[in-house]
Every structure is written in C-alpha cells, then in structure tokens.
Image (cartoon, rainbow, N blue to C red; front, side, top):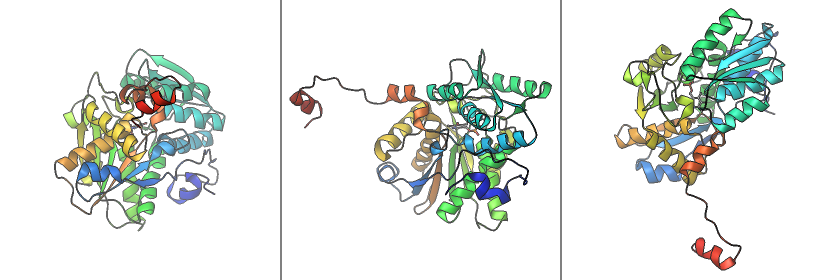
Length: 351
Ligand SMILES: *Cc1c(COP(=O)(O)O)cnc(C)c1O
C-alpha cells in the first residue's frame, strides 16, 4: 500500500523518529507517455511523458512539499501556519494543517484565485484573507507576519517545501529507469524548478542515476521576470498559478538553468491555452493553464528544432484542470442545446 512520501523517501528527507508523519498519501503520481499529441504536433520521434501532479491529494504538486513543511511545523510545536498563495499553496496548506490540527492563515490576491482552489482553502478550514494587491504583495506581508508573530511560514521559502518537492525527481527517475534528457516545467515563484534540480542532483549523488537532465523552465509572457531580467510590477497572465512578478527562488532557478545547460523562456497565453486544450482533447489529460506552459514550451522548442529524434522529455503537469473550471468553460467549444427529439439530437451529432 502506498502511504506517502515520508515512508518511501525517509532516508533522503530531513526527518527523525520524532517527526510526525502528517500525510494524505501524496506522491506516486503517474508518468504518462503521450501518444496522439506527439505524432500530430511534434513531427519528430521525441518520447514525451507527462508527470501528472494534478493527481496529488489536493490536486497539485504543492502537496509534495506541504506534507513535510507541516510535519516539521508540528514537530517544532507550532500552532499555526501562514502562506501567500495564487491558490494551490493555500489549498494544500489548509488540507495538511487540518490533518495536523494546526490553524492555517492564507493571504490571496483578491479576485485572482481560480474557483476550485478557493473552495478548497475555504472548506478545509483556513482563515482566508483576500488582499488588495498581487501575489508578490501577499508574500511580502506573510514574510513580515511570520517574523513578528508565532506562525510558521509555509511558502517555498520554507526549505522543507523544497525538500519535499524534490521527491518528484526521484519518482520520475524511478519510473523511467533514468533521468530524462529534458525536464520541462512552468516557473512561477521558482520553488519547483529549484526542488527538481536539487532532487536530480541528490539522486545522482546517491548513485541512482548517471546523467542529469537539462532543465527547461517556462514563464508566461506577461509574467516573465527571470526571462526579462527584472521584476515585473504588474504581472499579467491567464495562468494564475504563475502570475508572479518577483520570484522568491529567482537565483536558484537561474542556477538550475545554468548548471543543467538548460533554458528559461516565455510562452504566450495563447500558446498556453492551445496546449491545454490539445492535451485535454487529444490525450484525455486535463491540467490547469499554468501546467500547460510546460507543454507549450516543449512545442515551441520542438518547432525551433531544439530536440533530436529518440530523446526523452518529461513535462510536469503541476495542477489539475478542475482547479480552474471557469477557464476551461471559457475556452472549450460551447455546449449545444436541443429538444429531446432523437432526430434533432442525431443531426446535431452529425450522425
Ligand atoms: C505553484 C504552481 C506553479 C509554480 O510553481 P513555482 O514553484 O512557484 O515555480 C505552477 N503550476 C501550478 C499549478 C502551481 O500550483
């Protein structure tokens, strides 16, 4: 039986016998090989897999790091945790805090949270405050609050988040039998690219893999501070999970890019939406917009002739599509209306 990341990777995590295991059995997500999509879109013989992190307990990869951040907060005797969030961090923090019996405080940018994520934080008992500001403002606020008051910060500045999230690299390497040639992912606050690179390096040091992947990170064009080389005051993108203008792990993301001989580039909202729709309609895999930035980036690089036939790429699908139903309904083909008449229905169906 799968009982979560602590039981599986205890040896590689900063835990002792005294650390409680606050788990919802996160991790062990599938690595799915794309079929139709690759043939139709890429036109080269690239092996493309998606790591579907939307299948974690609260529907995003945030659970990988949150289980450890909350376990360590509980171990330290903390009574309350706080985070700034574009949505998924709050959903995950609220769930694990509930499990641990801790209070959870959440600051979100007002009006910019996908519906599913907000619903999760609310029903899982977090105290949610929507601030008049963006994610970067919310993060600045929770940093100060966690220094002044007895609450533990569980944003990815908390090193336990990164240590939990690095297990994604271990799993991919185990599922493939080696590291991929390319590891593609969206970049927002840049904790995840930092964590994956750390994970691959540790797995290599542990003798589990020989070669390391090239890290290919993708930001949304209107929220691409690392690509543009300066913070963005008013980031804009439909991919709310990566709508971040001043990433906390900026330096670490650049290190991951440079040490792995990878890239961090940008993709437009149109490319993101198109990738999200194609993945859903042609492969049956429904991810949220930010996640599709990894696929959009892969497609862009493939068009540029970046990959060689026979190589292997893994794209991390960071969150589930059901997180943001409004967006899916806005971009999908509309529902047709009909009477219950069989002939009318058949006509509409083109039968
Ligand atoms: C948090 C999040 C990201 C961005 O990850 P960072 O670690 O902030 O770079 C991307 N996609 C989804 C769905 C997320 O929840």
